[in-house]
Amino acid sequence: MSSANVLQMVYELCKETFSPAGSEIIPPPEAIHRLMSLLDTVKPIDLGLDEAAILEIEQHSLEIAQHISSSYSKTAKKRRERKRSGSGDRWTPPVTYIHIHDCKNFSMGVFCLPRSAVIPLHDHRGMTVLSKLLYGSMHLKSYDWLAPVSNIAMNSNVQYSHPTGLRLAELKSDAVIRAPYCESSVLYPTTGGNLHSFTAETSCAVLDVLAPPYTEDPTYYRVYPYSSRHLRKGRKNKSEVDHEGFVWLEEVEKPDNFILQRRAYGGPIITVS
Image (cartoon, rainbow, N blue to C red; front, side, top):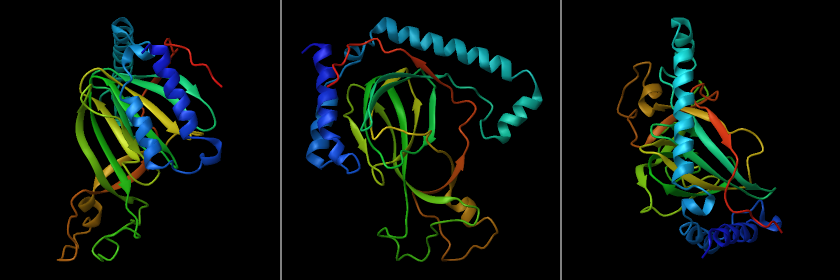
């Protein structure tokens, strides 16, 4: 099967799966499974990512990272400002986004991460998102919001919100995934790890299908251990215990050291119908 045919098939099946009539409804499991199975067949070359293109993307990102790191490390004041904003002291290589297609019901694009690049923790409000790691390996960490309507709601030991505005979430995934051994994955509006972050273990790229697409920037979060806020005032008793996998999430501005650059798509052209 040619690269053009593979991508065209992905487009056609996305169009069928995320039809206008069901744009606000999560597709049935069998429809999601068909799309995931098709995504599992996609290779980097199908999207115009040959070895030369991958090397060019990585080298360009590293050059930008070195330039920015040098510029922002010249004064102690700027380092302090970045630390207070939660950006840390280290600039990571920029992430490259290759836009393939979007319409009102779904979008397709590729995120290319050089080694050590990070996509910080962010959400996908109201979205169903399918992802396929095309090459390399990355550390995936994901969470879902915990609400009192969950099965643990009867446990009076659990706080679901905090006076400071933090919200409680539960760890859903904390693993390194490697291509080509890993299968496609899916997250839903309230399950499957709707909030996630990526850290590139090696140079890697992930194909994302978002339904519906972003209409505004995502919200970013900082993670605190559950006990760090729950027990901060020293009120420690038998009812105040740590809950494994629970964390507090604080909404933050987009980190300064997360830079997303765009690259023109150079793969097979989709025939839009």
